[in-house]
Image (cartoon, rainbow, N blue to C red):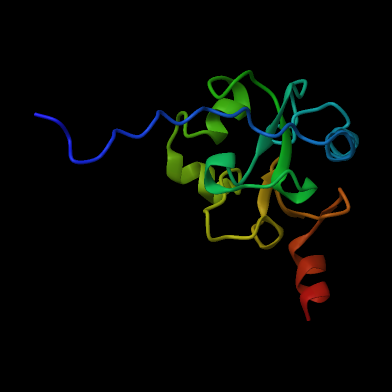
Length: 133
């Protein structure tokens, strides 16, 4: 039996857009080469808080410099739902929901709740509240 319409061609996988050099350099400067999650290990990879699959951008406030490789080890693995739980990743601010703005979601940054700014800095919740007022 012949189908009523032709089968669509398979979609080509495209490579994700690389993190622009300026954004990468700003994140690396903010981290000082130390993991922005645990604050103990050497940072190895740039992590998108709002995952690319959730239409996350390469904006500095959406990026963390984390230890670990791929999406499987260190803080980078934890940020992608590794142990202990995916819910904890959202609570840490390491995983931002599709409908959330990374500028408005605090992140547990080396043990302290902070906000990441578009200029590549961190600010305290008190500073964030006073700027929002």
